Image (cartoon, rainbow, N blue to C red; front, side, top):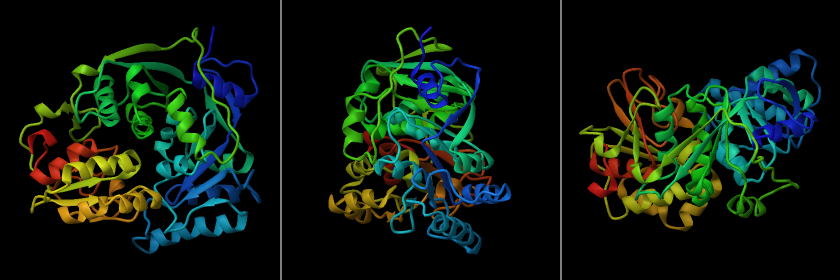
Length: 419
């Protein structure tokens, strides 16, 4: 019996010819990632067991992105722990404010994660890197400590569900809509501790930005990881960035899947996820009349330059509704600079938006856009749980950047087609 791409990556990293779902393995990791929320706990555990030196100063990555620029004393102290540890250990990949970006946009951009890699990160959206043909998953801070110390982590080999996307994309439909539609179909536990392998003619035509978005939200269906087999689009993206040699890995035709799910994309409209779950999705034509107070365009899900271009396309020559706050967050300094050079930031400012430094900020209710009681927001982020962006009685609606930008103009959830 053949192996899936995920199984082949895991087998290679634990030194076995093959692995099967359900097997427990200890595997070598290529990258161990922590941020300003999770890494301080990992560093504490690292020291408790007598750790003096990380397994590889080039392979441990610390990204203070959640509460930066620091919003209060506590967040400043959290970041100080990372800063001091990075200096002590001589970590190559530590990013200070001014160079830091949102981790799951920054690592692909910097060529730190490559096809065939095994990546663990103490952040649930580490699964983003599956878009590059890597096996990547979130782990707890204790597991991160073990990985930083030994360069290894334990896994139970997950089953894989194959999702095949056919047909053609309708106007304003993006990778964000495909993954929201999928989560709406299978539910928030529909891929529990499984790999979501995305494939089909539509996937092959998606940009890397859309692929990263889809793999980013695999965890919202309960998945251990999302993954897309590398192709020409992957190689073109990687070759300009890779900081070390890599080898692409592909699944075998005889691989066995837990199940195969096929979608006809001709029938998929732009999607909106209603609170309180990413699975509570509706097509834009069925949303109804919902007034909003705030729009956030950014995050590790949709803060890339392609997302900002689409947003600017919708916003150009228009003004944000006087009742709405529009917050735009480029995911990395490079994306910020690119948006500046292309005139996108001017378009945003002319429309009445505010532009933030790269930060996770409002996505987790940290800062830069926390919601008050009763407020409603449209966000291009990945979660809309109760209390996620602020007050428990606030409401969060998830969408793609085009829907978010159009909604900011209209003052209610709408499509660019309705403007």
